[in-house]
Amino acid sequence: DSGVTQTPKHLITATGQRVTLRCSPRSGDLSVYWYQQSLDQGLQFLIQYYNGEERAKGNILERFSAQQFPDLHSELNLSSLELGDSALYFCASSVAPRGGNEKLFFGSGTQLSVL
Amino acid sequence: AQSVTQLDSQVPVFEEAPVELRCNYSSSVSVYLFWYVQYPNQGLQLLLKYLSGSTLVESINGFEAEFNKSQTSFHLRKPSVHISDTAEYFCAVRRGNQFYFGTGTSLTVIP
Image (cartoon, rainbow over all chains, first blue to last red; front, side):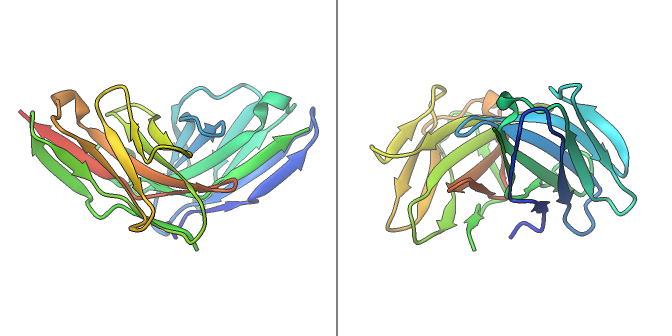
């Protein structure tokens, strides 16, 4: 158990809908990262937050947004969903922003299926 | 519960020396196995994967990993490392739609 909790584990929705994925980082970790993965492929970095502030942005679509709350949990909001948004969404956390030897801890993912 | 153990947090190795990054997983059912690499200041990339078939899988940059079901291991090896191999390496297991990641091994290649 990495200590990173993602909910829900599975989400099935329809095109055009909006969903929210939630991530609770490890206790004490200030940095949260969101990744998107198509099955069996590499992870695509979406966005990173550190202590409530956006730290880095990757290939995140404008239809997607995220935030990190004062209690350090993070939510990834996906709107106007399309079939191609079906993927596994991972959250990871670390104590501090990456750059040193901080370890990255991954949640087990949320499987999003857009029908 | 699934778990993935990467026993070595940091592995320093001299250039052109061989390296093995260890990965063990706990599972009594079939799983799919992956190694990801994260180069400094970059996102994670898929290095290699085992889905079925030959238990030895290779990447395009000289790494290989062998699936050992009896030892529940999927160690990553390279016979001769380069400076450019300096990165963090993550082992992962997929069971169904759930992925389970190890905590990563930081490989530092010393000139």
